[in-house]
Length: 120
Image (tube, rainbow, N blue to C red):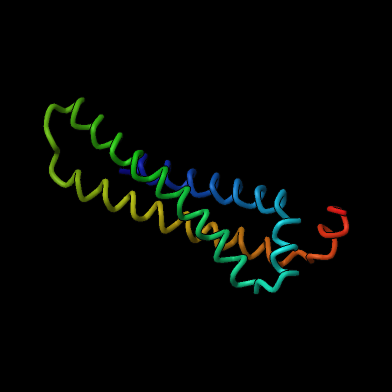
């Protein structure tokens, strides 16, 4: 269980890092959206939604693989395994969404003037 929690925590940090770096690269796009009338909350919602999709795409197959490998190695379904797998998957997704909120906050905190000037 501790290994699963540690793995999920590392995944959250990796996702937050990827989303932050992605938002830095997409500064021009976010600046253009904000210049076209998008509110900061809408840009944040976009980044958080992207993080949620990535988290679910990683958590569901990861949890299923962990479940399948545990059953394959033990030859049976250990007591509490389905609940533990579900809890870790949901907690991983929720933590990743929380990490993406941080990345989204950093994305909207940057001024749109710089990226728009660089795009031209």
